[in-house]
Image: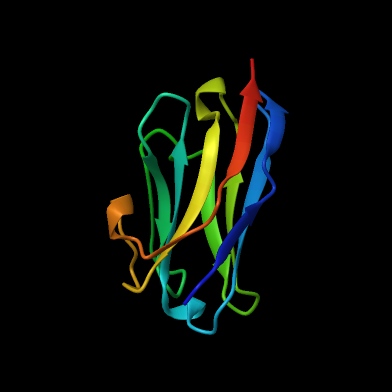
Amino acid sequence: QVQLAESGGGLVQAGGSLRVSCAASGSRFSRYGVGWFRQAPGKEREFVAVISWNGEDTYYADSVKGRFTISRDNAKNMMYLQMNSLKPEDTAVYYCAASVFGNGHLNGDDYDYWGQGTQVTVSS
């Protein structure tokens, strides 16, 4: 069993940066693939980024590629999403998710554990 808790959301101006974090409980976290998703008001949940269990493989949505960086620290049971050059369209609730499949998934339905989310608002 893994519990996830996001933090670090907030209000930032367009062009600014923000880092959201995901703290995980459980000794198996280091073996799980983990990802970030987001959901804006009135829109469906959207894949943002995924990182493999050992941090060697990452993949990003085209909309954030080159601006966002996903990383993890297995020694601390932490995952991060560094967001730079933020745009108003990045405004959403950001969720972290973990999968027993070590490479993670692009489809949110394939994840086993979810956090509660953290709000990120980018003003124009």
